[in-house]
Length: 146
Image (tube, rainbow, N blue to C red):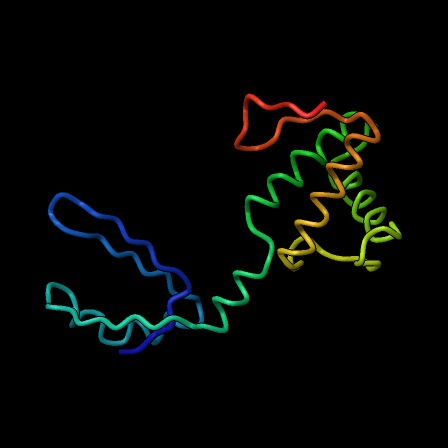
C-alpha cells in the first residue's frame, strides 16, 4: 500500500516508538484498503520526502510569524479602538502602499511568503515606534517594546 501522508509525528516511548501518520481526506480510501491485514503484523515502511511540497512549506509564512503579526495588530487595534480584522486590513493596506517597501500590492496572510511576512513584521515594528504602540514580543515575556 502506498499513500501520501500530509504530516508525520514521532514520539519516543519507554517501550519503543509511536508513529502517527496524518493522511489527507482524498487519500483515506486508498489507505483503508487492506488496513485490517496490517494490524498486529510486522510493518515495513519507506518514507519519502516530497521535495516540492517541503520547499513550498519552507518559503511560506510560519505560525510564529502569524502570532507576532497578531500580537502587534492587537495592540494597534486597542490603541485606535478598532476590531482586530479591520485593523489588520488597514495595516496590510498601509504596508502595501508604503513606497519604502518593495511589495506594493495587496496580499493575504494565508498564502504570503516567509520573506513578505518578515518584511511586514519589520514594517510593523517601525510603525509601532513611530505611532507609540507598545507590545510584548512573543517568546520574550520580559521584553516590552515601548
